[in-house]
Length: 110
Length: 114
Image 1 (cartoon, rainbow over the protein chains, first blue to last red):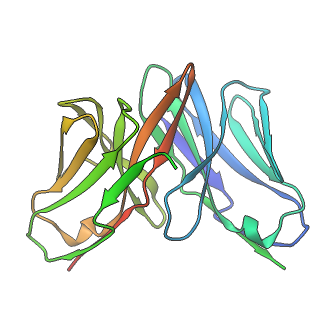
Image 2: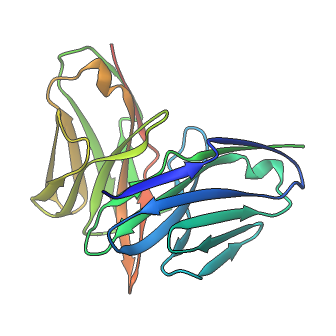
Image 3: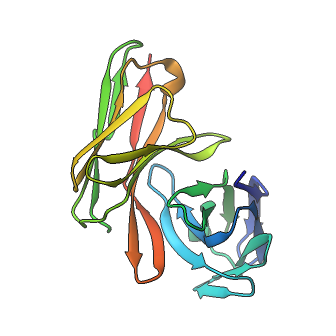
């Protein structure tokens, strides 16, 4: 069964304190792994797609990496505006369904 | 913005009443999805559509039906709402550009069933 688990559930950081969020997955042939950011009261906003082990993507203070069993979202020198819930999702090969983890709620204090 | 509009944004209804949520897209994408989001469960797929009149069930489809009579509109109906269907509902469309594929989400509908 396709499954996505994110950890930790919540993370509090001081501004400038770098850290990583984890997304572990089991899927019958990975078609793509996706990271989203969600602000309160809004829909998820697309960040990255990763397709194969070893791939990396960067955007400002965020960097996503992928292995055969998990993905990491590294946040370098975070700012308070990076506070949000970060969601991970996978899409299995030959399927057009996307399976989401429960998310990591990030709070960055000034 | 991906051109997705959900309506209504907020809805309060009573147990046993029918409810229809609407998702409208201006992108002409083939795939459309309905998800619900609850604390501790993340986003769970209810139903999805891969074309006009073509739909399939997701992981939490019991108590829900969908219809897609036009490319741009995807309706979610709760035939007889229950308190367990209190949730935030998100519509999404799938954007495929070459080999790239990702979901774009609407702003959500907060549904409360009393």
